[in-house]
Each structure stands twice: as structure tokens, then as C-alpha cells.
Length: 315
Image 1 (cartoon, rainbow, N blue to C red):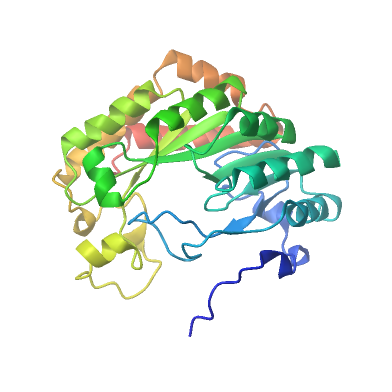
Image 2 (image 1 turned 180 degrees about the vertical axis):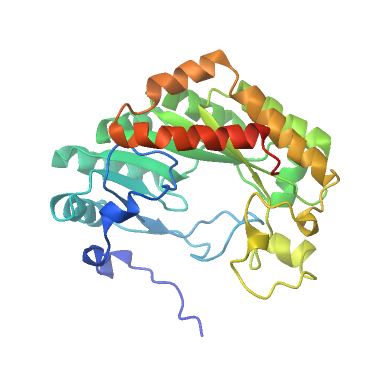
């Protein structure tokens, strides 16, 4: 039976990093989509998220539990000194829910004198960012953040139970841009009841946002999320993972929007072409993109993937 959630995360031992080959993992596509340096390691500084988005997992629970800045710094110092990590990726559900703690972690890294690169392929909630946090992240070595917008349609946000202040999100994106931190925004489309008008709202918002890169993910109702229980409980899913649950799937059984599958696929392709044809955006990406060997080696692969998104058949 479930044993409940561990409240005191500082009581846990550090991960057994000696059992992991960081150099081998650096050869695989990172969650961040880019690397400034290798080898790199991922860190979870907190568990749980209090926001009840209906499309999201419940793996870590709704209660926010966090490690102390001292515990986080000890793990980073161990990764750098013993395992030669040069880059750290934070993959919490909500790193900055406790804004004071997030800033203290940055201050601890800065005070340590560690010369590392930091990325947030997850973890940053876009409407809980202020100018001081951005400055501290930059000083600590942060070069890349990802912000989950998901959907801006009021009707869809109600279906998703999505809590996000879009005005504050825009402010955060502008702050990261001024700090020369590369910003990626995520969207999800294909929700039950979604219309083409909803898609248009997301497209317009994304094109006006001063973000650098973006991904439009197709909604997949994983068992265990609330929307699966509400709309997809009749699906016969015997095991996870499976090919049916790839986030670029073309499976028609997952499309309960009001939009034909071919229209969803066409929207996604046209959106990428519009988004990445903006000269100002391309100049920002060129300016902020790490000019290091690991990034230059990944660039052809990332460029090919973007071409496939913009012109390929997948949806």
C-alpha cells in the first residue's frame, strides 16, 4: 500500500550518483533541449505541487515539500567536485513556489564560488517570478528556463483548472529576456471540447510573447490524471508506456476536441512556421544560444527536429 509522502526531505540521503555515468547520459537528448556544458546532472530540490491541473500527474502529491538550500548546495558541490558535473538542471514541479527559498538557493550557489551552468527544463512557475529572482538566477549561472503556459483560452483553462496569471507571465518573460536568459514556453492543445477559436487564442498569445523558443504538445490523457477519469475512462489501456501515449501521437482515440485531427496537425505545422520565421526572434535565439561545443554538436539535430515539426506529417 502507499506509504505516504516523506515530509522531511533533508533526512533523505543524497542520490547514489556513483552508480550513474554522467558522461553517458550527456550523449542522450536532454530534457532541456540544449546543453551549455557536459557532463550535466539533474536535481530535484522540492516535491509536490499545490495546483490541481486536471491534465497533470499526482506522483508527488499536492503538498509542497522542499529541501533546504544547504541540502541542495551539498548535492551540487558533490556533483561538481566528485563527479565533475559542469551543468545542473532543476526538474522540480514548482521550484519557486517558496520564492524566498528559491532565492536562498541561488545565493548559496553564488557564495560557494561554483562556476556552473544552470537550466530549468521544468520547475519555474511563470507568474511567481520577480526581478530579484531573475537577477540571482543569472548570477548563479542560469542560461535557460522553461515556462508552462499550456493554454490561454479562458474556457479551456477552466477545463484544465489551470492557475496562471498571464500578465505576470508576460512580465517574467520580459525580465528573462533582459537578463539574456533563453526562455522556452510550453503549450498543450487538443483538449476535450477545444475549438479552432481556442487554438487561435494560443497562437496569437505565443506570437506576441517575447519568448525565444516554444513547443506545442498534443494533449495525451495518461491514466491517473483527472481528465482521463472524466473523459477517457472507457479507453482500454493495458500498460504504460506504449506507442499510443507518445506526445506527438496521431491516434484518433485521443482527439475529443471539436477539431478534426488533420486540422490539429495543420495548425501545429503552420504555427511553428510563423513562430520561427520572426527575424527578431531568430536574432534573440542566436544571441542567447550557448556558443559551446556541446550545443554546437546538438544544433543540427535540434534544427532537423524543428523542420520536421514545421513541415512533417505528425500532429
